[in-house]
Length: 189
Image (cartoon, rainbow, N blue to C red; front, side, top):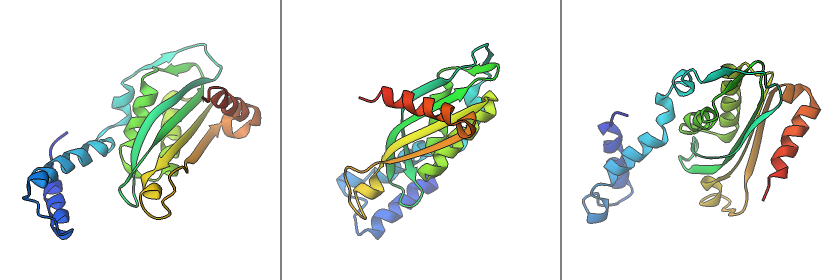
């Protein structure tokens, strides 16, 4: 990832606009650190799905549900630039091909490292998994906590948000959707 000095300069200007002294000891390198952090947190914009998957699609006779659950994820809300963190669960019904196990969390990370709302993130992950696997169906559920709701606004510390996106058999067949959601619930702690 190439360093962007303009992002650093903008953070310097924000500190000044807040009435801070960017030359004081604790803030002297903050614009540089904040710029590097923001570039990392939004590095999904520089990644491509094809590079993430890296041809790790394999022929398989497996035709039952595959689930990768409890994928830790964090992102930044596009409305306040504050984090939301949680877990993502991804399921698919293979149609002659399976994807390498580590690729699903990498897909989640690629999309999570962008500015967005949780609803869009859920949809992007589902569509990407469907695209690369050609699956008969894909289901994605994200559970997360939003700092924009915890630190400001209504200041609700214990609330969380759940979103789901169901494609193909997960949308069309209530039994498939039910199996996925039941399997997620059986692993709750």
